[in-house]
Length: 211
Length: 203
Image (cartoon, rainbow over all chains, first blue to last red; front, side):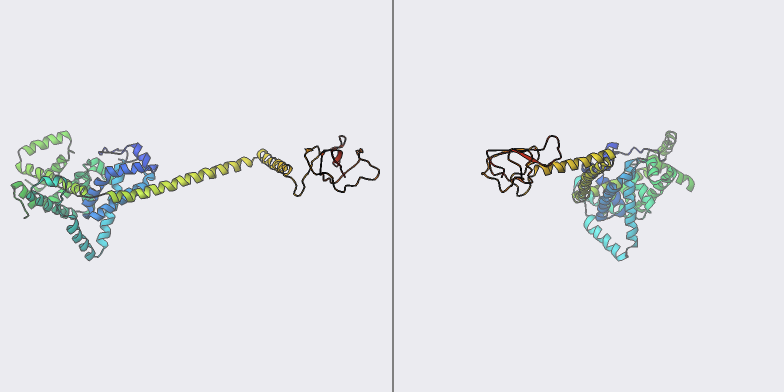
């Protein structure tokens, strides 16, 4: 399995990896430009907190800088990169779980107040107010549903839905049999679908929630 | 439909959605799907769920300003790069010193260095005039300078005269004329002898 070379999009070339190892600042600029949003989305899906997700993005790139010498190319660079991000996400979640509940609630409250406002940029402008509200609600519901998943199920779902990784790529990244990846994706989807069932059913019937 | 059959279908649905079914399995599943509106609806919902999740998370990323994060990362990268450049310079200097050290550990080079140091010191001593000696002469030197007349009290040895090659002086302070100082040809190790004083006296 370790001989596999995943074919994820925008896989950095050996040239970029060499430059990263040499500490070339331009290579780090290029790496961040390519991956910062993708790592952020992945991290946000895990921790559901904008500041924490940004911290994870930053720490991921810093760890690449500090550890890139140890990257031997046995796996794809992207696999290695997401493994760093995933470990940081899991670490954050575990720390959060250990933190007093009051602190956690404050964090979530702050998050909802400051970060879960309707997006006012890009594609959201293209939707009607009702549709935007619905999407916002659905987004919050989705995050809530994701939070009910265990770390392993959440990771496979995010790598599949967000990054579009193949089962083989996910299996390599997590060092799992492909059958286990398939099973986890199915169970993660089933759970999220169950939680969001009313939204999904209503959308199918053309019913909108919200104000 | 039994529970197991239903679960099997849903696993296939998820796998089919991801394009991970083998071609034969995919064809078989599509036939099943064709006559099953409920399954079609499940497929649609599953697909919609993935699209919504991706859209929501990407939207969150689009709202972010990454410039401060980039600056912090670049700060560490560039500071490390500067330190590395300094180390390269230091190591170049250290390598050069080490090369020289190894070179002069060889006996031949060590001897050459020692000889060079001795010769250099000798040349320096030769070229620097002795302090308070306006006319310090070495054997064989030729000096030509306009000086005030008279030497100072330098007595001739008894029995000698100014023409004698046996007049041996320990010191001469010429004040005028041209002095010529030689060693005796047959004895280069002999003390310096004043042979001739032109346009002045040696006394």
